[in-house]
Length: 280
Image (cartoon, rainbow, N blue to C red):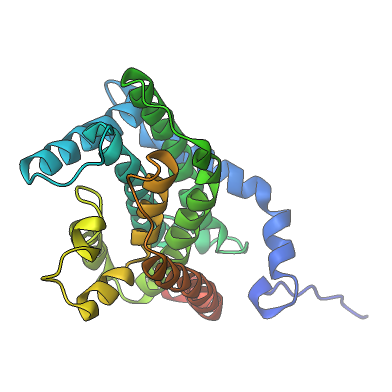
C-alpha cells in the first residue's frame, strides 16, 4: 500500500518565496492590526499617544535647535524646519527598532507554523508607517498654523517617504536576522538609534556641515554615508524649498548606501531564515 507524503518546506528553499508572501498577505495585515491594538491597550489616553509622541519630539528638537542657534532659512518657522526632519527620523527609528526585535517578540509564532518569516518585520514597519502618516498630518496642521505654503516640490515627498521605507526595512531585516542568533543586539539597537540622532540633521541642517570650512572632506563623506542624511535633506527640500538645499554628492552616496542595505538585508534574512525556528 503506497502512502502519499506531503513535504512542507520553507519558501526560501524554493522559487515560490515571493508568491508565498503574497499568498500570506492576510497574515501581514492581521499582525499589523494586532500590533496597533496592543500598542495602545490599557493606556490612559489610548491612541492619542500617536499624536502626543511626535508633538513632544517636535517641540524638544525645536528647543535644541534654538538653544544651539542652528541655522534657519529666511521666512521658515523653526518648528516647521524641525518637524520636516523629525518625522522621517522618528519613522525610521521606530521601524528599525521594532523590526529588529520583531522575530524575538514573535518567537512562539515562528516555532508553530511555517510562513515566510519576512512577514513579521514587514508588519512592524507597516505599523510605523501608519504612525508616520498621523504625524505627517500634524506637520500639515503646523504649516497651516504658521500660514506656510510649500511650492510644487511637495509633490516629490512620496519619493523620500519611499526612501525612508527602504532604509528602515533593509537595516531592520538585517538586524532582525542577526538578533535571532546574537541577542546582544537588543542592547546595541538602542545605542545605534541614539547615536544616529546625533549625526543626523534633525536639530541642525546639513548646511552647517557642508559649508563649514573646519570640517574636512573626509568627514563630510563619512557624514554622507548616513542614509538618513539624504532622506531628511530631501524632506526639507520638498517642504521648505530653496531654503533647504540638497547636496547632490551626499544624496547619491546616501541613496546608494540605502539601496545596498536593502539588498543586503533581504539576502542575509533569506540566507538565515531556514534556521530561525531551531535557534529561537
